[in-house]
Image (cartoon, rainbow, N blue to C red; front, top):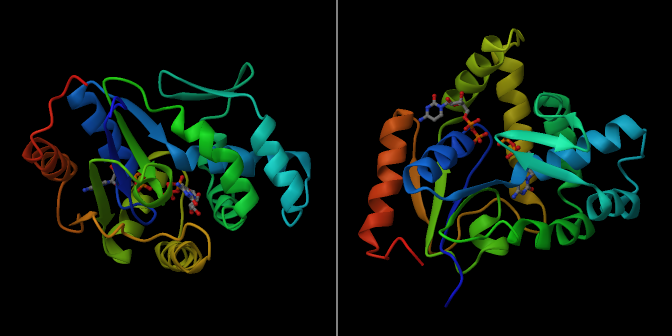
Length: 224
Ligand code: CDP
Ligand code: CDP
């Protein structure tokens, strides 16, 4: 097809998807889609506007009409930089709750597919390989143990000056994973044709190298 190639990277929270997706995209000179950011933006708007999160129709309408842009690594809503606001754990948890709504997922589908542009796209999320880009030539399911992921997220938050309890973070993670895996629409799951990469004991560099090796192993020309 004439469609630009996609590398889909799915997996549970803090498995390293975002970091790895950005590095792989840099290495290949491709575009990047952080699909979780879209769910987080909707969650932030719901939270700040005092919308009832159970009101599925309104939540989906917010997703359909919101005006957001990704620019040089920043997330902009109008003139406002909301990059930091959408990273709050409360926003991530709300994102995971509303992400179970089929209407919301539907409202975000075309927006996500519009990121697919030449020379290629690295997209990370939960359903990149299963729903949004089912024809992606390379699908990665990035795993890591809850312990490794909780430690990574803890370190990440501490670097931002936010102190958290490792145990409660791990517990929140288990709950979020379970909700993401059990929901009936687009559950977190490896596509049948995904390559499972466990990064529990890998460095970021090793994980990136593994993905790039899998990509070059496919022998697809990098200029479509
Ligand atoms: O996007 P996702 O929630 O899957 O994870 P991330 O935000 O990319 O990564 C979570 C944290 O784990 C970041 O601080 C990464 O630097 C770190 N990380 C790591 O220590 N080792 C890896 N192999 C991958 C990520
Ligand atoms: O950074 P982290 O992995 O914790 O979360 P994220 O990728 O920013 O996504 C936040 C929430 O949005 C997830 O817990 C999922 O419930 C939801 N999500 C989704 O349902 N589908 C996607 N493609 C991406 C995120």
